[in-house]
Every structure is written in structure tokens, then in C-alpha cells.
View 1 (cartoon, rainbow over the protein chains, first blue to last red):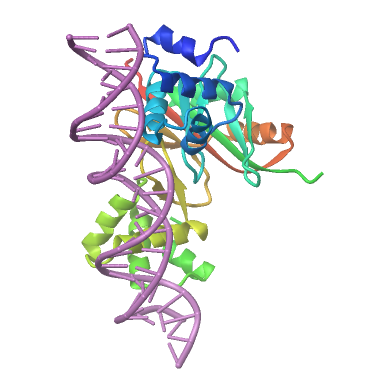
View 2: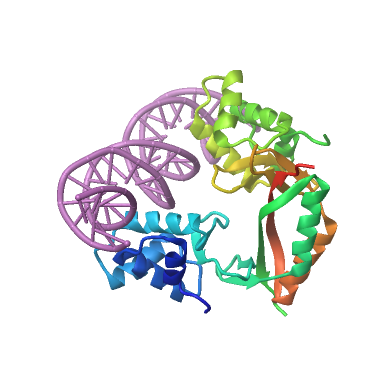
Length: 136
Length: 136
DNA sequence: GTAGATGCAAAGTATTTGCGACAAG
DNA sequence: CTTGTCGCAAATACTTTGCATCTAC
């Protein structure tokens, strides 16, 4: 827990309103990958007057400021997660929807290699694994 | 070009209407990854009376029948592509939108290994690389 | 002949935006 | 103060659906 979202906002010169502070707090404390609806629900419990438009505007702003990242997993709404130093990819349980974060250095390296092979510099990537729990 | 989409429909017991034949033909001949709008435009040139609802219904049906796959690349509309024996992933030029298909057996293997490490059987995956063309 | 497909327009979702009121720096 | 933000409701973009008609098998 190196730095809160609020601190990141200050560092990046993002104006901190009461609403943004609440959204920042909720996202900082979230251990999952909420979509805007879920985020709105959590935020509403703290301040019921915050509008969903503000939530949309704020996650977009935070994303553009490099504070949150957006995931568009298969067939669902966009989900958000705090962006921090440690990059990771996602393994999604197709039955339960559970999301596991993982890192695999070797895959990372190979991706860069593939991009290079085609004459590209890798600027971003998305790797999602969809699986079912093993019986055994 | 082993088998046309029309042939796949017959093989899978999907009823072939005139509209579906046209959509099948357009997708069979497409070398890119059209979204529903683009597909609707191409299809309309052959039969202007086909409705966009039919295009939506048909791509969904074809997807469920394992004839097409749907891609939801960053920040865009869903794109479709014919599904054939050879699996591949995508490298997307973030400047031009150009899409390059690639296969990397080693990455495939590592993905399966990661899933297994967490106790999962891999049922699907999504790998997208976003890059910019190198200057050199 | 009958189940399923189509066209149309209306209804859903998810998200964005115009605007007057309001608040942060 | 002034610029940017908020809440609201209306607008947009994409996709789905109800229904009466039509068509493949």
C-alpha cells in the first residue's frame, strides 16, 4: 500500500473534490475489480447524493491520469482497478467470475519479442485467461 | 480456404436463409475484422433490404455455432472474424488501427502452464498486443 | 405445414453530455 | 473570483427484442 489514490491525485495535479475523495477511497480499499455500478453502490453508501455521472467522469479522469486501469473482460461491463507499479494479468474463472491476478515474466518477454518481430514497439498489452477449476 | 462458412452452416445444422448466405459470403471473403456496422454496409450492397437486426442476430448465431469469433478490442465496437483451425492472436497498431495476426506456440504453452499453476483448465484466452511502428 | 427467420420499430444497456448551480484553489 | 466540477435529465451508441409476416425445409 505505497501511496493512496488521493496522494496520486495531488502528485498529478488532479483537483480533489469531496466526490473524488470518496471514489478514491473506495477504489483504494477495493481488493476486486468493480464495474461502475458496483463502484457507484459503494460510493453511495458513503454519500448518497453522488451521481453516477460523476462516477463515470471520475473513473475516466483517473484512467487518463494513469491512476486506474480499465478492463473490458468478455461480455461484461468495464471494470476498474488501481494501477500500481506491479503489472499483472488476469485469470478469470468462467463459472464464478472470480478474478485471479498473476505475473509471468517469461510471457511478458515473449510478447515484446513478438512485437519486435513485426517491427513494433509494444506500448500496451492485454492478456486474459479464462478457465474452469480442475476437478482433481 | 478449406471450407466456406456456408458449408460450415450445413455441417452444423444451421438453417441457411438468403440473408445468412450473404452474411456468410461477406465474412468468408473478408480479410479484416469487420464490426457489425461495416459488415452491415457490405451486406447492404448485395441486398439493401437486410436489416441490421438480422446482422446482429446472425453474427451472434454464428458465434454460438463456432463459426465466427468476436473480438472486443480496446475502446471500440465488437469485431468479428471467421474461426478456423488455426488459432492466432492479434497485434494492433495503435496509430493506424491495422491488425496483424500472429501465433506464438511458446506463449500458448506458458498460458496453459499458468492456468494449471492456479488449478485451472484453460478454456479460452485473449492476448492482444498494442504497438507503434518502429522508427528505424 | 410448421418451426424458425426476418424487418421494423421500440426497448434495453452502458456511457456521455449540455446546462445551470456550486465549490476548490 | 474564476475555472472546473456536480447533479440532473436528456442524448448517444451499441445491441436486443416483441410482434406480425414470411420462408426454408
